[in-house]
Length: 335
Image (cartoon, rainbow, N blue to C red; front, side, top):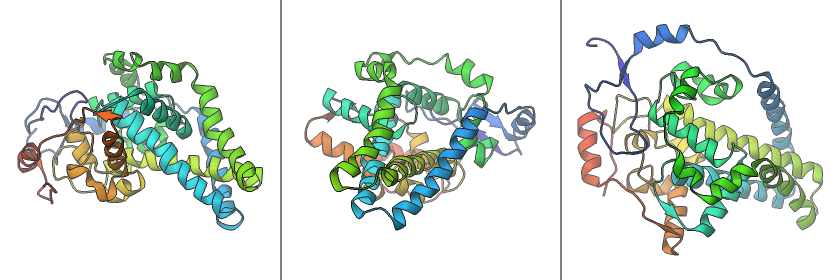
């Protein structure tokens, strides 16, 4: 493939094996572009209508939060975003269950499961399943939100169309038995709809009126709907923005990049070149990126109190070694 721009699939979710520059899993971009032209997007109209109305309602909710809501309601919406939805995704579905990058005791797993329900991004099993497929087959037709199909598709379009057959076929070949071995995951999977409706919509709507006399109207469109849609879009930015814009200090041959904006908004999930190069590191960034990685601080906090253990990391030596071999020459922050 000399003379052609190449992309490689990123590391798997199960090992730190480093893909070499001449690895056989590299993708010929020109051939892939020809294959992409043959892809037919079968629109799921229910999802199109649902997400359209959600975003319209969210804009109205933002207006209410800015000009009508009490300050307690605004603070509550921010609380639900950071402590509820994002931790349910970043610390829970992503770093704990999808990657097994650390272990958590039952009380914390239950808390993260509830926070995951606040996020309304499918149950933990389905979220972790799709994410493992994404890592194993990144930037290929088997990637659920393949960024080579464009910004809109990788952001939200993948939820508005039927999955490519390769996503389903190759996804079935991966092992998810560890997920179903967790009773917390099994419980949430069985009762996800009522749990999500209660924690994502009902609770955020009733708490403000009961606790500080906010109107139900403002509570529903603000802390419930606007907060939900903002959380969704920040999560989607990891799939879109962080796969298109940023430097690549660890592996210049893959699409994921270091994107500080996404890291700030998504509580540390934007250090994506590091994450796809070293997917089992619980920090998702060298030194944990603690200035812009609240999720790592959250995990370390509960580690101090014994709720988190067996945190997996990559040594500084291996980070530097990999960076020198496949990085783009941009700055690497190590001890």
